Picture (cartoon, rainbow, N blue to C red):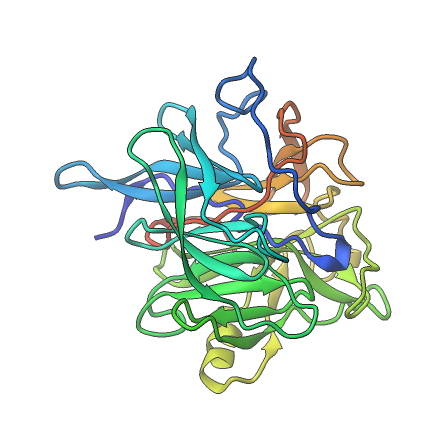
Length: 347
């Protein structure tokens, strides 16, 4: 049964903190300001770097819980009341190399919550009352030399296969299907070259989100930036909101042949047609009905963490809030695949 009401995805996560533009930093976590018991600052009524999980109210299924994560802590937001509550700190990670911070969260259609570090997939046990969020390790991700994973999102059932498929994004901007049992990966492709900047590719800079549109067609959004291939040299001042080519993604999944996954850029057919969002390091991405939200991490390009909306016509970003109290900011996001969103495809 399709969930009614609201969908938010941010970061969708799943946020992919690309090594092309620098990672989200090691260690730290969020911390919680005692003067702000919810751990958020400013006006968070618009949502955030989030994942939505369905709840059953006795017959009608509605999306009422929004999940948001920093490196170390999980939060919930009720989008109907905008009440924000800290659920608790993550527990159960190994603390080893590339497995000390949570980089993203994804929610499947059943409302089950998954998270990942740079090298491991976990399933999260959400407590009934605020407390520790215990993680159960599902698999170590099969990594190539120097590879780290940041983005995480489920594709809707039927988009790539009969069931939902977990997709991850790595520091090189490539997307992979990840087997949650074995940790094996399948390279699905990348976002291609940037025709406006010679010698640069479009690399996944922040996040992925997948959902079914109003016509029940699988749809994907991502944030990208121009980067020198397999380097940390990026034009990181302005990330672009783009549409994922779901046909190419499905073909790559079936044939194991990586492909260019860029369907279109919001605001123009190439990066020279517009200035993008005008904000960098958009590590969280989400949609709520027809509105696109992005969360920017506090990095070299942002003095504070930011909540933005991105205009789906011009691709430009507008600040909703810059008053978050986290020391480093948003880390990851995801969204259930079971709610239809009405965001038009780019022109």
